Image 1 (cartoon, rainbow, N blue to C red):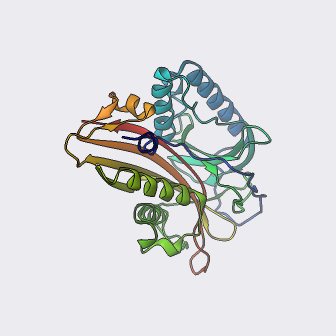
Image 2: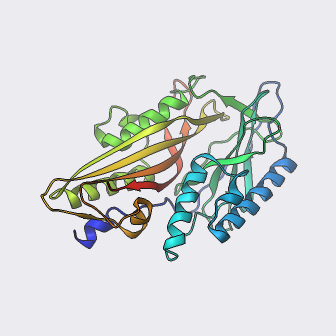
Image 3: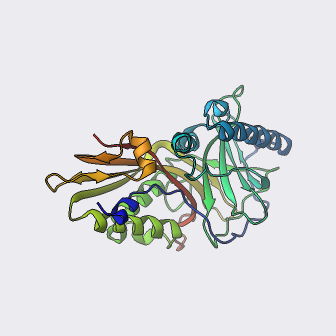
Amino acid sequence: MTGRRAAALACVVVLAGCSSELPQPNPQEVPDRVPVVADVQADRIQGELEAALAAGDEGLDPAPLATRVTGSALELRQARYTIRRQLPDQAAPTPLGGERVVDIVPTTEGWPRYYVTVTRADPAAVPQLLLMTQNGSRDPYQLTTFATLLPGVTLPTTAPATEGSEALPPDEASGLAATPDAVAAQYADVLTTGTASEFAGAFAEDAFYTQVAGEQAAESAAVGAFYGYGVTHVPRQDAAWAVRTADGGAIVMAVLDSVRTFTITAPGAKLPLPPDLAVLAGKPEATGSATVTSTEVVAFSVPPEGSEDQIQVLGAARGAVAASAP
């Protein structure tokens, strides 16, 4: 196994790039409901989240995250902690938090609740979308998932946080070009099958797809003579959230699960694993097959029903969270 082939398996965390334009609040009509979070409350939540992340990152210990981080955000951080405890030179967890640039706040009467805060770690940093969820009235808001804005992206305009925007159910079109759940499933199909997907034309070109498709093609070519290669991307159940934008469309955030499988076909061949994946798998090489599971988060701008605009990918995050080599 050459170094090039082994490097093709390395786990990747997206993304960085040039600065992205941020939305300016624009009033819109919303139902007679109260925004789920006020500015002073969001400020307190952000501080508590950053304190938990700092404590966890310092000790590479997920315990301090227990009440403030959950879902895919926790999975990605736990995997980084596991790797860094054995390989201190590996990449640190993605920095999160910093200046709150804008809050995208839905209005709703019940629970669970959620909102999105756009943050920037420093003036030169690429903004991030942090999705905060609350299961019940007595539960704390938790960071559930996050995405880094792609280069050159402009976030759609939403209502001011003091007025609130309509929260949209993931399984209903609600005047959109497609339901949030369908958007996630269609994009997962595009990531899996590329331009052959029947949904490829529904999405504008984006840097995340270009990166993922390029990596998959490189991996397939690198291991093709000795190993079978397969990859799937599927939307995670109950992991899509949507907020109405001023133009009648929506910002959608969704979690996907990706599985890459390498099956040894040449007699006596072995598959060396890159150091980070070897830590996750608990062994340095595979003698039969290897599976790498990654968590992917994608944020979309979905146009309103009847629009000729394509669905745009606003941001993404990605990282390997598990590996096996039986």
